[in-house]
Image (cartoon, rainbow, N blue to C red; front, side, top):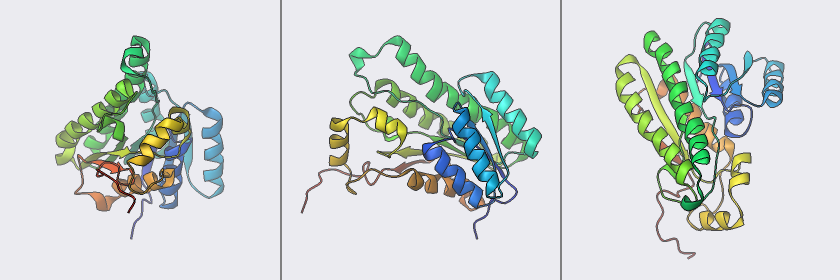
Amino acid sequence: MFSLKGQTAIVTGGASGIGLATVWMLAELGANIVIADLNEEAGADAVRQLEGEGAEALFLRTNVAEAADVDALITATLERFKGMEILMHFAGIGLEQHVLDTTRENWERIIGVNLTGSFLMLQAAGRVMVEKGYGRIVAMSSMAGVRGGTGRTAYGASKGGVSAMMRVMAMEWAKHGVTVNALAPGGIETALVKKMHDAETRRAYLAGIPMDRYGTPEEVAAAAVYLALPQSSYITGVNLPVDGGFDASGVIKSG
């Protein structure tokens, strides 16, 4: 019932974590894969494994905060696969730092990659998809962009900005057959989260998660892939929590 055979998907941040889990799910449904990442070794290794399983795959080293890299990524994808139907934009960086300790340099670095990088990628993909009259875009927001959290000044602002931007693009491109949605993961066991979440962060986070655990990259990837399917055609402008019930929770009692 669900197939992406003949479609091409770009996955930024696709060499690890949620991005890599998404890459494999997209490939299993028959999509051609373009991994865009800064980690050349991991990206090339992922492509070798994908090709070993019979998938068509390409790796391109890409800094999403650089317009020239973004343009080169789109150009190379179209040259290789003659089209691009799906963008999974998951590349991003994290920072946990209190407001009064947040430097201008750190602010601009987080905003530059997470928000400006998202604008560049989504805009470039949107141009191709609007002209074609079809597309699926899934961006990466975060629960940090929905709810206030200690130390999330720059990170939360960047992810909240992604959600706002995504909604505008969804409205402008809906009549062109292009859907634009975002995922808002909560605590997910990724390399980035392991760097950002110390023991106290984990304790505080788990206290507000009804499922009482962190999620997995595969659980987020499954939500992303659904939004990439042709069958998700009536869903656009949604910031989807993938958070074990964190956003919905209030007082959580043990019994």
